[in-house]
Structures are given as C-alpha cells and as structure tokens.
Amino acid sequence: MSADHLLLVCDLGTMAYGEALAFQRAVSAARIAGAIGQDVLFLVEHPPVVTLGRSTKGTNLSVDPAWLASRGIELYEVERGGYPIIDLKRHRQDLHWYLRQVEQGLIDALAAVGIAAGRNTGYTGAWVGDRKIASIGVHARDWVTRHGFALNVTTDLSYFDVIVPCGIQDVVMTSVARELGDAMVAPDTVRDAVVAAFGRVFALEPQAVTAELFAAAIA
Image 1 (cartoon, rainbow, N blue to C red):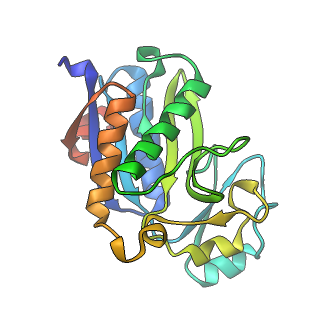
Image 2: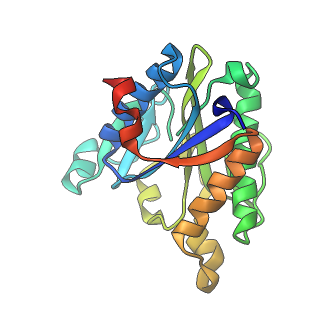
C-alpha cells in the first residue's frame, strides 16, 4: 500500500485539552501545507473538561464557570466540540459524507466490543437505543478536518449533569463501561477496535506512530 493510503495513528495518552488542541491545530495546518503526507488519527484522553461550540456560548452550561474552575474542570470555547485529521480532497469533498463515515466507524468499533449502537434520526453521534455514547463535532479548513469524536469509554457520566450535552435537552449519556457492565473489556481493546474501524471506513491502513514524528512538520 502506498504511503498516501496510510492512516497515521498516534496515541497521545492523557493530555490537557488545551495542549492537545494546539497540537491538533498545528498538525492540521501541516497537513494542509503538505508537510504531512498522510491522514492522521489522534487518540487522547483529557482530564475533566467542558467544551462549548461558538454558537452555543453559555446556553448549554447549567453552572457558573467559576464552579467548574473550583473543581478543576477546564472550560474551552472551540470551533466544534469533541481527532481525525483527514484530507477530504483525497476522499470526498463532502462534510456530510465525512460525518457519516465517522459515525459508521464508531458504530463498527462498538459492535466489535459487543455493543449494538446505531444512529438517531435528527442527531449526530453514536447511540445505544435512546442513550448517547459518542459525540461528534466537525471542523474543516481547505477540506482538511480536525476535531472529530468523543467516545465515552470509562467516562464519569456525572460530569454531564452540569451541561446540556450537544444542546439536546434530557438526553441520557452512556458509556462503554455502563453498557457492558461486568462484561467490560479493557480500554485498549476499545482503542484497537476504533483504529481498525476507522481504517476500514476511510479505506486506509493504520500505522502506529509517536508524536515525535510530527515535530519537524510543525516546527
């Protein structure tokens, strides 16, 4: 398989949201400029953080920002909530198509670990019945995407009590851990399922890399 059909998969571990956001933006810019020749999938876990889309401002936040800060919960306003960095000029220049592919990747990954997820008409993301297990936010410049998805694996779901998730009133959030219960699989198993599924839906061959690979391109 040629190099431009690789999906560079970089596991950033646990990283503060602001640091991950800056890194993602830099890699996206390098992808646009041609300094990085392959599509990228970053996998990362953040300490507690609330993200607000620019159109929502504070309307989906049910507590004062100072309350969040007092509990060590960060608050960020971003282009869209949520990290695939995909050059859609190499695939299809259609953000709706891209959104459906991300959803399908999540649905396939969840199926691989024993959760029957699907779509919910009128909403984005991955759902288990009427419970939302993954959220998706899309931003693109020059047809290169960033942000992407937030999949609840072992997430403390009580954090969703302080927001209106994705602006959907009365939505019930769930997680892989809650759905599987005693049958819960290791988080690494979920990670591997996501990587394999995203490789399939974008017809790319996943290749594990480290963050150091991008250092020269974003310097």
